[in-house]
Image (tube, rainbow, N blue to C red):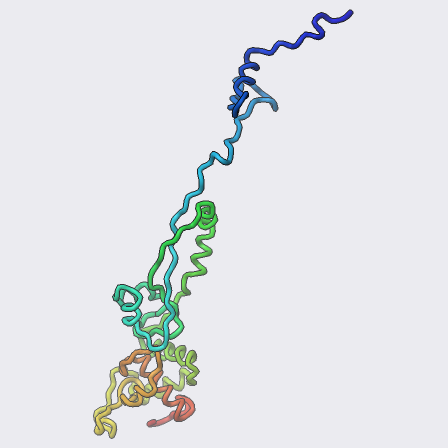
Length: 252
């Protein structure tokens, strides 16, 4: 027997009509039905991407550097590239320069300031995640340090000599220092022929001023009593005249 109402349209509940009406003619806001369970429970609709806030820029700080040229001094660099305070410049670059601010070698890269830029917000997360890697890549390597004694002076001089192609060994330098000054960096000869001529021998390796000036090595102090500058200049002179300080066994 035919079922009654076979062709009648199923009546829609008032709740269903309400949902359809809300979705007519615009974006519908789907609300979860209280008490709904299982895979068919209504879920909140994700907000359209267009409605999300646009990324903003975040500040980024980068270093301003200067590569030391031959003849440069900290004072000169500070006056040209900073506020003029060479001590502040030295403190900022102590790890690169080392313990002696008078010794700045050509080729050293010094930090002389910073500058601000802008980084898109969408890359800020990546920047933060790689901050440690980036910092280690741009940070200068810790400078080699030397003790402030005869051993440290000789070792620092040897490193400078190696960079400048000046021959010599620790033993050769030490042997000549002990003979010439007994390791006294302030030693000065006031009685020999050089002293009589008005150019007394000075420092660890007893160098007269004209010789020191002629064989001074760029990047070391201009003070002939400075132990590292004195050793390096004397070894430079000995290399030119005797082939190496190692070949010197007496007055030279």
